[in-house]
Length: 294
Image (cartoon, rainbow, N blue to C red; front, side, top):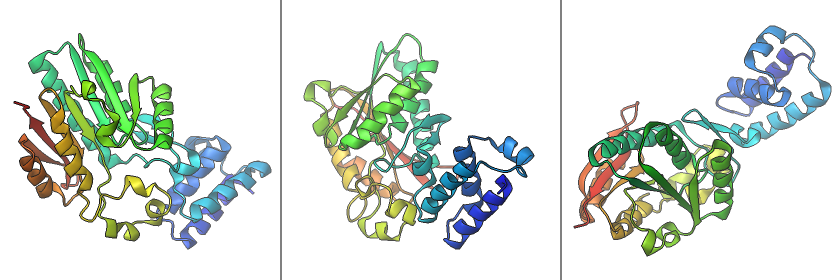
């Protein structure tokens, strides 16, 4: 069987099983299994593929047909131009979350120019794969000077932290990881952050059953379920973050319909300068606010 024939057969299998991006996934799995890039397959597509690897290929195609996410099959995902290891213990990094990192990067650089701090301390809560903390660390490492950068990332899941630690090592990011439920992972002495970021679970409990099977059946529910109205973690984090010893910014990723609710949560907890920022599709995606702590 040639590469082209194998890819076409895989496409037919995935399409029949209602895999949304069946054409792209069939090709990407072929590139992964045979360790060939797209250019090679375009030029050499009519050549016979290795029979042993064909068996491996169609085993993965069958798993993808069962709606196991492509990234879990290849154990890799790209986020902010960095490669991350992923498995069933973490959410797969999504492009939507890049908006959070981009906005945080802009705000942090503005803060550094205005305040000229000698040390900058950041916290990423519910870190999962570590994609937010690691990407932001790498971006800041390249852009800031004369400022010590200290980054802490926490998660309740030990399995998720194992993934995050691997990603930090692979990407050369110096981050301190802590295990625990939200601020229980952070001692009172450590509560002196300049920025606190989080992409917490924010899906409404009754919506989870309606999600794509790739998400509903194969990604950790604990990283999705935000309670009855999807706002449980926002309320807890916004309230407990006010124990921070210095003024700080709190930055959340939010769902498309949660902007107004976040404004209310910020107001109820004494935050100032709150804002809701939109993604490229014009949907609410980031909520941020300043807490003066005075």
